[in-house]
Length: 134
Image (cartoon, rainbow, N blue to C red; front, side, top):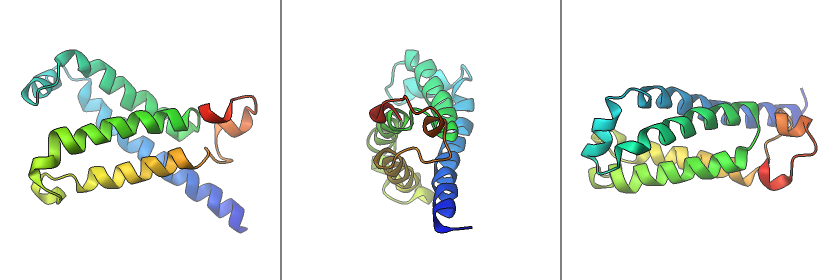
């Protein structure tokens, strides 16, 4: 394998792993009992479905390699909300309920925004998608 193929596989691996994490995390958010948790942290319960769908559909988009920059931007907003609204007061370390893991996820999502979707993506197959939508 040459370096370009390894780069492509690595790039897809980062997108796919972040996408899979968001898909798995979205599944619990479809449970109606998650509304109670939202109310407990001061978020309107009507946000349950938009958050769950954004994470589920966005995860699929990252894995498939379509709308990766838009998905990354949406995930960045979700992660910034998690860091500053939910976890900030718990401190940095994830073992104490902190925002350490969310920061790692945010860094990965920002790298996805900065890079194009890569050659292992639907966006690279469909050449007519504008660059800013890839």
